[in-house]
Length: 505
Image 1: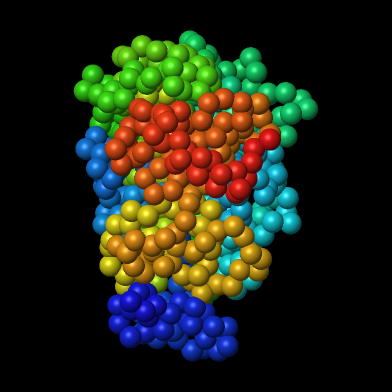
Image 2: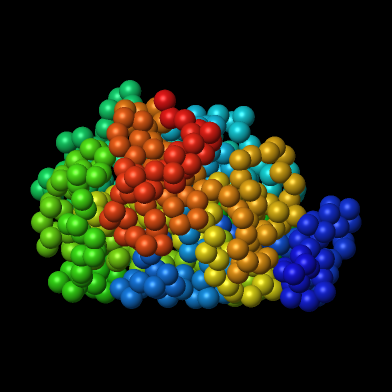
């Protein structure tokens, strides 16, 4: 299928051709949307929707019968949906840095949630700005410092907290501690010298660790961060959607990330007593797992209560409620696109920065290369393109290269990502797209890296035993084959390819 049919379903020019035409003559309409009457008819708008800690499998379109995600499911039904999408680092700031720059973590300064990357790394916003796009970021991006990284229009946690005013007390109580990953503070350095200003002023709730199992939020639904991001995104679309200049807009929610404290109507959707623990819960063979994994299974330090199966079911219920609340806000953003007659002029991508183990193998949170933690949902809805499912493993480092190519935007500097456009054009074809890589804690005490190639996933730990899983025969990752003689050749090959890509030190 050629590019014209891919983007329009009819004989029309590509987004790239449209972009070139628009640069050459501002009055010339792109044939692919001629007569649409919208301000961005010459070039497509791009809307990147993101959430935080959304486990790939927790979505109706991915086969989850518990999740209440009708809006994301509807989007998936109009999209190319990737069933094997991965983050490149299973923790917030480094993963988002790779999304923004198209660079792997070892090519960036951001190795954890407290270190920013330098302004010398162009972001996807810089590429779109250079092409004349209005660039906006509304919500969480965890830049760690005050850089705007190329975005002209930006609203984040600090703007939400100003909106909350005195009600910020309720959110400080939900967190129970300083937690910039959840926006208080948004930038660690703001409190680093003087300490946490909320110390001694929070109403404590008796949790045993730093993260509560979950409860209903005392904030009204309209005051949640998700509602704020949704409203401000809709406001932006009304103000700039048809203003004569195409937009690149990132709308980024916090949920389902902690605090696991949804609004009442979403909490009411899930009864903890009806929640089932994952099939792999309690079944991990600890004798064949790295020591750090075993320690996390035996005690989840942020939430020690999760050793109790009843508390574990409660956590899962509140996670699903958080997810449902985020989905509801995504639906309102997508409705605004339709109401403003922007839907047919806008590429929409949805993904998350990483997943959540949610009890798989007895693990919680992220930080791992198992599917629950490293796997992410990934959807692309492209005007004129039919929906499809693509099983080829891909990663978020490719988002920048993909979205710029789809929009006909020239990147002002190269990066590590490979455009997914060939997969979007022919999602059912078995493309040789190469390995997927991820890394974690490169400057910490337990650095590790992962490669996914075909059905195989191999994890290299600098100071511990390796892991090898065949995801076709063992999707729950219960059987570590790294030390099995019959799989030694596979383990050696994957280790060699992984360490040729990057060797943790």
